[in-house]
Length: 427
Image 1 (cartoon, helix red, strand yellow):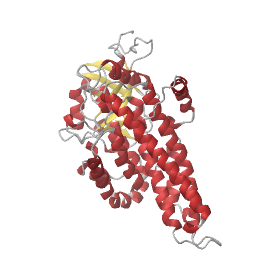
Image 2 (cartoon, one colour):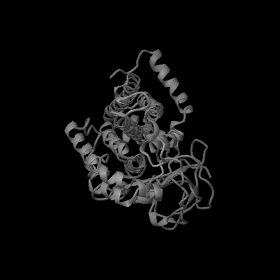
Image 3 (tube, rainbow, N blue to C red):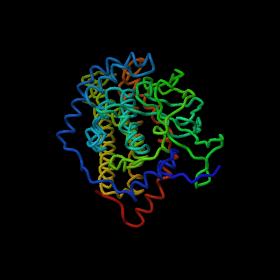
């Protein structure tokens, strides 16, 4: 069956990008706020840092269970950290993306799995705000704006939604990469939209319509098959949506006004990369801190004190420079796209710079962690050592589809055109 369905309500990656473009160009967001007050940002970084002893004490349990513990998740909620990205008019703290990045970086510094989970909880909760009516989104985040939602958002579509009395009958196969979904209030799933006869609805582009749905966790079955080399505590295994009737308000085809706000106006891809960026920065920072501590006054072979050795010092300066440059690039890219979103003028150049900055951060992350591990010597050998964990976590993080080297080829035409016309951004 062919049906004209508004593309802003679809949830394939392409459709979400179209939705973002529509928000940018046709419905400029209200100028609600600029960049966050540095004192407020410092306060939230301090809040995150105060939880470091708890987060680090729970790493072993999270590794064993293959899931960040409920105790850690509850601590983030109690501290108000789940409210950071939610707009102030919806009850949140309304931090801009660059400011949020500094807070999320601190959590990833404590533990990559914890940082991955926190970021996917906070960033993941933004997507229903982009796709669902405001009334539905308010139900997701709750009166205190600290409830969360996330789930598998792109790739092979695992299920279908057919209209029936009371909503849509949802049927689904298992889907992979349910990071952190075991702790959320609504779980995301992509579904092909069917008509009442069970036939696929075809959109204006000639392709089957894909919708995003947000499911009550009572209708989710987790298969418990996450057993990776790194990021062991993220719970990123398969999950399946049980067959049930889902109310229309939880589907991206639901009618109603969508939210206009800079945080959503940045678009799909910059939000996805916000999650990954925070993990890369946190892991890089931890590697630098750990190798500095490991080298202090340490003898290695004929070197009496490693931290006084010129070769080590040169390498340390190099990897610290890589971290500082990657961090500055990311913060600048997110500050620029935020300012553009305030004015409803986000362009493909803004998006490309965010992607470029994240790819760069992950490329230097590999260098930073491997260099730190080499200088750590025998400290890096035990399986439960922090250097071993950082190495494993980095390897798995780099294998995410969004960070595949082939993705950078998609950026080249935009960046080349910008350079060829002399319109490259410098501020």
